[in-house]
Image 1: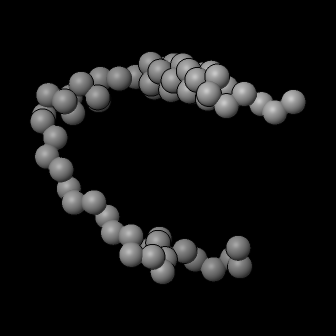
Image 2: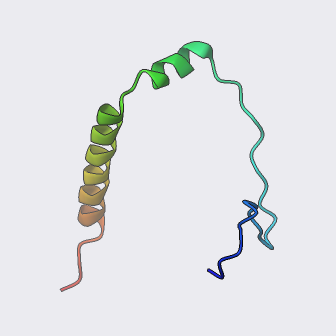
Length: 63
């Protein structure tokens, strides 16, 4: 970093564009807001362990 202030803009030469906004039902949003940090952290940790285990079965390390 050169110490200059960031503009916050993402610059790229690709043709990436943001997805259009989607409508989420209020009850769905309320359900997600009810999830605590501890619960979400546990879910993500367990999902990561599962993905790693499946990946190891599909692609065992080379000997």
